[in-house]
Image (cartoon, rainbow, N blue to C red; front, top):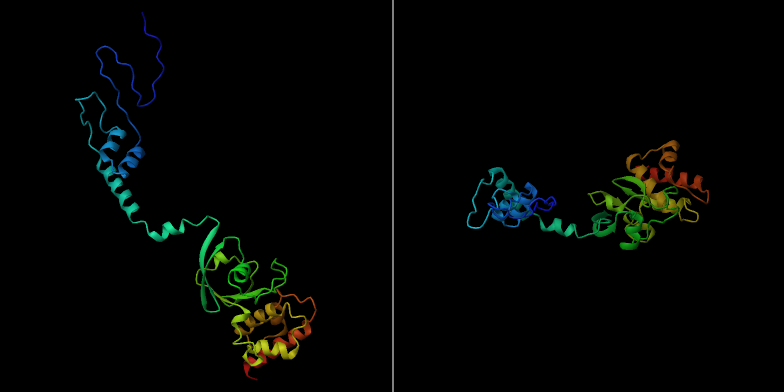
Length: 258
């Protein structure tokens, strides 16, 4: 009677034993399967799984091929790399993908913080570090009330991501200009704004002072056009621009020692 139709066998699956045949067929897996097996210490087992040792009936196991030298070399490289993974890298990977650990240098002091990648510098300074010098106005980078200096350049802290500032940048805020709260402890620019009436309600004044500081650090004899360009990112709802310009000119004169 003819044999019933046999279903095709999967790779490595044992088939029925026919007359005159032995019991199993060789199992061959991929080079990757071998490396995984070898990486866990089972080099011989991995070689068998990869087909370098033929699986034939018991008592007749025979090595038909030696493990290629290049494969053994790859296994050793995998083991060596795994052994030398720094502990710091493992710790960093424990943070969620949306978080970063950064060191912010603010007013010459280093602050190590863990922050969300989407958090602004203003949010980190205010909510994590308790710094209240920068006022949040529009929260869109349009009014300049929250301006601080990053490497000498005035920027809106509400639009700069804190996670991108932990690379050695120097951050300067309004708190970093003065030595205390008395008039004589204030920076000359702050003193002049107070004496000249450069502030009205005062909400935007901190950002304007920081932009003025950035300007006068590079140009102590500015023209009106220079001031207009430097303060282009700062708005004053009180419309106190004439007194603000007078204050910048007076501060420049003070810094020149005239």
